[in-house]
Amino acid sequence: MDRRAFLACAALVPLSGCLEFLEDSGEDITEPGDVEIVWHDLVRDDPGTDDERVVVWGAVRNVGDRTLSYLEVRATFFDEEGEELETVIENVDADVSSGEEWPFEIEFPRFGEDAAAVTTYELEPATGV
Image 1 (spheres, rainbow, N blue to C red):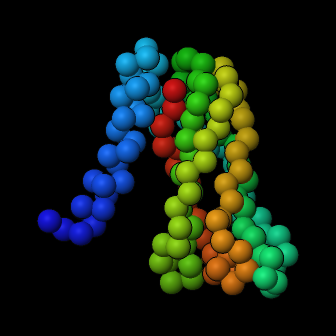
Image 2: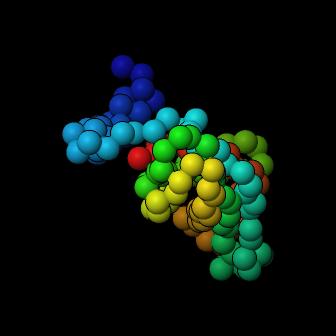
Image 3: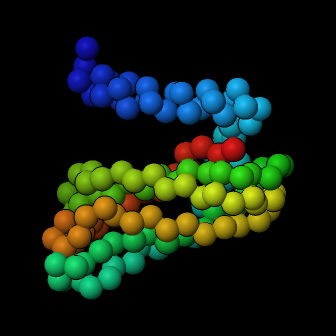
């Protein structure tokens, strides 16, 4: 078996139980298309120091027809060569009606030189309930 495929499957096994619980509890899992990222920005604190940190701030909008009470937003951070450094999933836990927006903040998990290596990022809504 391909190593990456194996790792991907291994990472999904713990999540499968969570999604199953939500489905069994009567909650509907929303398609990421029901949520739109309306703005985002990468912010650096203390650049050039050992305390340098990188945070992505943004806002998402509920473009679906029902109120959402939970959403995951995934940020993937890349270096100058386009190599993936880290993927972080942040959850937004609030009741948001159709058409409303709410903010999120996703912090790169390392500081200093590691944070300084971040040059770009990608965002995507993962799941919603």
